[in-house]
Image (cartoon, rainbow, N blue to C red; front, side, top):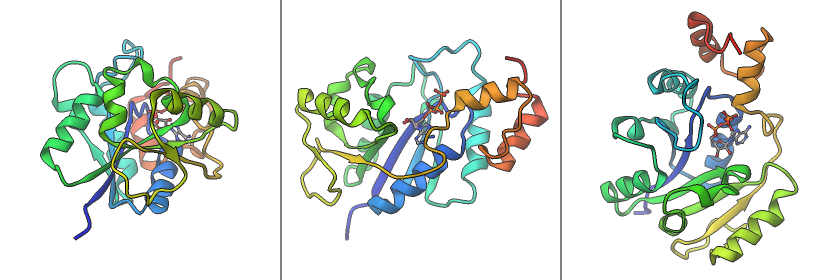
Length: 215
Ligand code: ATP
């Protein structure tokens, strides 16, 4: 039997938006993944936390957004663990629980270019496959340069049988590729319509508690 192929998409999801969902659907189809875990970063070490809504609330929005997509699965592993949310710990925990599963860490190129700030990033790069989505045309050369410096083989082929480390550079076209949660928070604080960018049930949660209304 073929091993289960699981994508891992970490994020603060503050809030989850259509760019995140589109990313999951496109990568799941392109790489034939069985599922993608949307791992909520409960206590992100690199983002300003003062103004960040509680992890439970971000998780509720994530669950609402992913409900129609059975292969996109919310994951609260980092919420249940104490302390900062480090990716290396999450990957190790997942691999220990399921040694035969194949894991693909999915990230946008802007996030990947900051990977050197992650705890034990060299280990992270070697524990799992990486799928890097190029979100700006200028990122390809920078991402490839970094992968070469780190000694990580890369290409576009995703059915390459070699074990990790291996990175796959992926592109797709989408109206949502440039969308960010920062834009949505800004729009909400200026009283602008966000319905084209977030799922209706997520917007409903925000409106009920007046989330992001003050900038
Ligand atoms: P913020 O604006 O608050 O920094 P964000 O919208 O970038 O948030 P994150 O939760 O930080 O969202 O992103 C989680 C992951 O999703 C990252 O790997 C990021 O590169 C990717 N991502 C974010 N927005 C998009 C998008 N519009 N299209 C594709 N990938 C995206």
